[in-house]
View 1: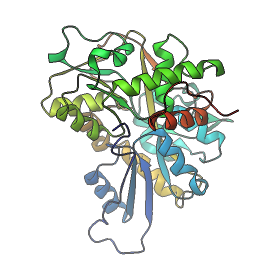
View 2: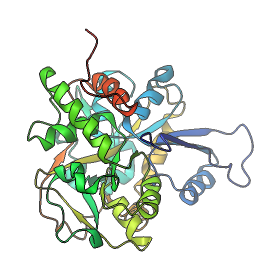
View 3: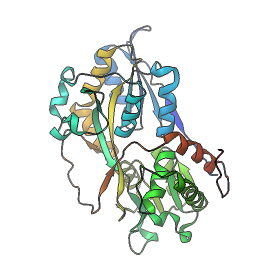
View 4: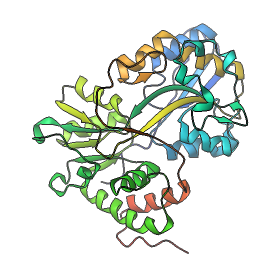
Length: 345
């Protein structure tokens, strides 16, 4: 089956003990591992509020959820810098004041030098606070490779047919296909879409399936003796698989690895600005920042990572030429369409 088992996982975390109905609610739209239940309970108890957490599995779903009702359904989101730029352009976010979030002072300077972080400032205003980051490398089963895979094109290797997992994300997959051809992953020419569509149809035929959530990928990896996994969640997935006992390696392909910097941003429809700021501040305290590293294998913005010893370059995500077109074509590819992938004029 080519569609992922899950596109969106929504979790409404229970009311903390002792909280009365009708008290303030903070509505988070975020990713797996960014709002663990025990840490959420700490925040609820400290502030006497309720937290609702909605988890998403790809940027397409995040866009859809936030755009519905013009951002009125959520107070706070986690998104990469390219998506933040899109949301700012769509007026779905409101500016914030880092000075009101005291723990930003604990962040490494490069994550506080806001004008130098593409996508998070506009007209001199800051719209997001960096939280965590990773590259999207290749995870491979050591027992099935004599030498580590060197290229993105390994995902298309017919010898691995049915033993490859890739991510279900329209924008990222077109970027991946373009990158595999040595082209700009973020600026695809109109004439190149048919060729890249064919390439992604070929990828669909080579993979076992496209996953959305890291837990889903880990389960599939074990159950189906997967040889190669494109790790959208990066080192978070590497840690998850190794913790489960898998003998896996991790490489950055010679073409480079797409990389994301996820940030907290406040929706234009936020009901309680101070409460949203309090969550961002809480996320930059030691317990949550340590949990990113120890539980998820992800880097935080407070400390330098212990090792960045993998050779290869990271390619930070940027806005793409036409996200809607990518999404339309990707849905057709997932649905099983064959080449040629003709677009309506």
